[in-house]
Length: 248
Image 1 (tube, rainbow, N blue to C red):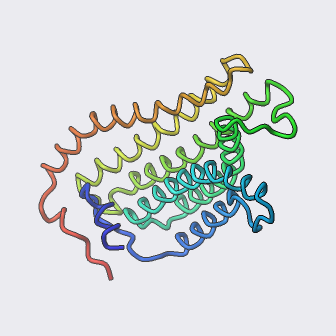
Image 2 (tube, rainbow, N blue to C red; image 1 turned 90 degrees about the vertical axis):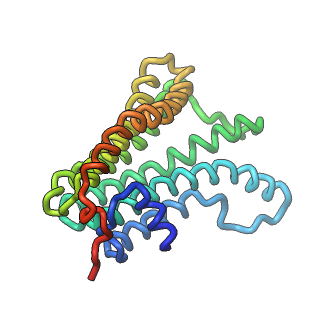
């Protein structure tokens, strides 16, 4: 755990939440429940055909697991950095957890469909009965994705609003804004996906998923721009404001 904490704090942000709280415990239960909803199968296969079907499900399960892990990791980092338990944080966190549970089934459905197409699997019945349904799927997925990361952006904005009460150093104030814009930009990509799905012809709405490659573009540009401000803030932060906080 110490190595994990050191990895999170390598940018110079000091921890204010080091102990497990009731918010952490409740959130972990919800994340665990979300993982059970994407599990491949709860039953042991009795024939090879059943085993083969389960094995095909491991690819979408892995993708869903990785995406849920990244959301959990972002959640873990926020509460270790700020340790906030005020009412706005609780409300935003509950909204985030609701969005995670909302996001699970569209996530699993979408990547099961994609994996099936890649391996050439044929469904016993048509997946879509109308071309408009593929558009709706991409819009629902984009909205769920955007909702989650807008919640993270709102949590960082709430932390920024309380910067004086938290006694954030100049570096930590800058990093808080950097975290906010990072999450906000990622959330906007989800909205771009929705717009692309709405503009494209219904039969081509699946191509809206390629807009998620913009996340890499955003993070690259944002990292280049924010890096200069972080270096300036680090240089202007007194040594006493860089020392680890004492926890009781």
